[in-house]
Length: 128
Image (cartoon, rainbow, N blue to C red; front, side, top):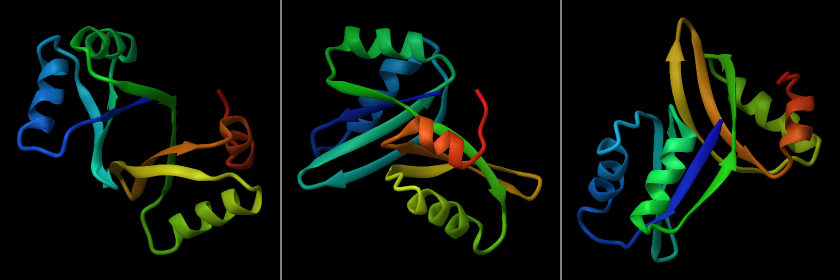
Protein backbone atom coordinates (compact mmCIF):
# COMPACT_ATOMS: atom_id res chain seq x y z
CA UNK A 1 0.00 0.00 0.00
CA UNK A 2 1.24 3.51 -0.78
CA UNK A 3 1.08 6.74 1.15
CA UNK A 4 1.28 10.04 -0.70
CA UNK A 5 2.72 13.01 1.18
CA UNK A 6 1.77 16.37 -0.30
CA UNK A 7 3.35 19.53 1.07
CA UNK A 8 0.91 22.42 0.94
CA UNK A 9 0.91 26.10 1.77
CA UNK A 10 -0.34 27.13 5.20
CA UNK A 11 -3.54 28.74 3.95
CA UNK A 12 -7.26 28.22 3.92
CA UNK A 13 -8.56 25.71 1.38
CA UNK A 14 -5.47 23.57 0.80
CA UNK A 15 -7.14 20.41 2.10
CA UNK A 16 -10.10 21.09 -0.19
CA UNK A 17 -7.83 21.62 -3.20
CA UNK A 18 -5.86 18.41 -2.63
CA UNK A 19 -8.90 16.25 -1.98
CA UNK A 20 -10.69 17.70 -5.02
CA UNK A 21 -7.82 16.55 -7.24
CA UNK A 22 -8.63 13.00 -6.18
CA UNK A 23 -12.41 13.42 -6.08
CA UNK A 24 -12.48 14.81 -9.63
CA UNK A 25 -11.06 11.48 -10.81
CA UNK A 26 -13.29 9.36 -8.54
CA UNK A 27 -10.33 8.22 -6.42
CA UNK A 28 -11.43 7.10 -2.97
CA UNK A 29 -9.43 8.18 0.07
CA UNK A 30 -9.13 5.33 2.58
CA UNK A 31 -6.93 7.14 5.13
CA UNK A 32 -5.79 10.70 5.62
CA UNK A 33 -3.64 12.61 8.09
CA UNK A 34 -2.34 16.15 8.20
CA UNK A 35 0.45 17.72 10.20
CA UNK A 36 2.53 20.86 10.26
CA UNK A 37 6.26 20.66 10.78
CA UNK A 38 7.99 24.00 10.74
CA UNK A 39 6.05 26.26 8.41
CA UNK A 40 4.94 23.62 5.87
CA UNK A 41 1.82 21.54 6.40
CA UNK A 42 1.85 18.04 4.93
CA UNK A 43 -1.20 16.05 3.93
CA UNK A 44 -0.71 12.27 3.92
CA UNK A 45 -3.20 10.31 1.84
CA UNK A 46 -3.79 6.60 1.23
CA UNK A 47 -6.16 5.82 -1.62
CA UNK A 48 -7.87 2.78 -3.05
CA UNK A 49 -5.95 3.21 -6.32
CA UNK A 50 -2.38 4.45 -5.94
CA UNK A 51 -1.62 4.40 -9.69
CA UNK A 52 -4.52 6.73 -10.47
CA UNK A 53 -3.69 8.90 -7.46
CA UNK A 54 -0.09 9.26 -8.64
CA UNK A 55 -1.26 10.31 -12.12
CA UNK A 56 -3.81 12.77 -10.73
CA UNK A 57 -1.31 14.39 -8.37
CA UNK A 58 1.34 14.55 -11.10
CA UNK A 59 -1.05 16.18 -13.55
CA UNK A 60 -2.10 18.71 -10.92
CA UNK A 61 1.44 20.03 -10.64
CA UNK A 62 1.53 19.40 -6.90
CA UNK A 63 4.82 18.31 -5.40
CA UNK A 64 4.46 15.03 -3.57
CA UNK A 65 6.34 11.97 -2.48
CA UNK A 66 5.13 8.43 -2.12
CA UNK A 67 6.16 5.73 0.27
CA UNK A 68 5.21 2.13 0.86
CA UNK A 69 3.38 1.73 4.16
CA UNK A 70 2.41 -1.14 6.39
CA UNK A 71 -1.08 -1.60 7.69
CA UNK A 72 -0.93 -3.48 10.97
CA UNK A 73 -3.73 -4.78 13.13
CA UNK A 74 -3.53 -4.77 16.92
CA UNK A 75 -6.02 -5.55 19.65
CA UNK A 76 -7.99 -2.46 20.63
CA UNK A 77 -6.87 -2.28 24.24
CA UNK A 78 -4.37 -0.29 26.30
CA UNK A 79 -0.70 -1.10 25.71
CA UNK A 80 -0.95 -2.86 22.35
CA UNK A 81 0.53 0.04 20.39
CA UNK A 82 3.30 0.34 22.98
CA UNK A 83 4.18 -3.34 22.45
CA UNK A 84 4.28 -2.91 18.69
CA UNK A 85 6.41 0.24 18.97
CA UNK A 86 8.84 -1.48 21.36
CA UNK A 87 9.26 -4.47 19.01
CA UNK A 88 10.17 -2.13 16.17
CA UNK A 89 12.48 -0.04 18.36
CA UNK A 90 14.36 -3.13 19.59
CA UNK A 91 15.09 -3.97 15.96
CA UNK A 92 16.18 -0.38 15.19
CA UNK A 93 13.21 0.28 12.89
CA UNK A 94 12.28 3.96 12.93
CA UNK A 95 8.58 4.80 12.61
CA UNK A 96 8.44 7.88 10.37
CA UNK A 97 4.68 8.34 10.52
CA UNK A 98 1.73 6.53 12.02
CA UNK A 99 -2.01 7.13 11.97
CA UNK A 100 -5.28 5.37 12.57
CA UNK A 101 -6.44 3.40 9.54
CA UNK A 102 -9.60 1.92 11.03
CA UNK A 103 -11.28 0.03 13.85
CA UNK A 104 -13.15 -3.21 13.48
CA UNK A 105 -14.42 -5.87 15.92
CA UNK A 106 -12.06 -5.23 18.80
CA UNK A 107 -9.05 -4.43 16.63
CA UNK A 108 -7.36 -1.23 15.53
CA UNK A 109 -5.65 -0.92 12.16
CA UNK A 110 -2.70 1.44 11.94
CA UNK A 111 -0.85 2.77 8.91
CA UNK A 112 2.91 2.97 9.47
CA UNK A 113 5.66 4.42 7.34
CA UNK A 114 9.03 3.07 8.45
CA UNK A 115 12.65 3.49 7.43
CA UNK A 116 13.21 -0.25 6.81
CA UNK A 117 10.10 -1.88 5.39
CA UNK A 118 11.65 -5.32 4.93
CA UNK A 119 12.91 -5.50 8.52
CA UNK A 120 9.62 -4.17 9.92
CA UNK A 121 7.70 -6.89 8.06
CA UNK A 122 10.05 -9.50 9.49
CA UNK A 123 9.79 -8.15 13.05
CA UNK A 124 6.00 -7.94 12.86
CA UNK A 125 5.71 -11.25 10.99
CA UNK A 126 3.89 -9.71 8.02
CA UNK A 127 3.90 -11.71 4.82
CA UNK A 128 3.53 -10.16 1.38
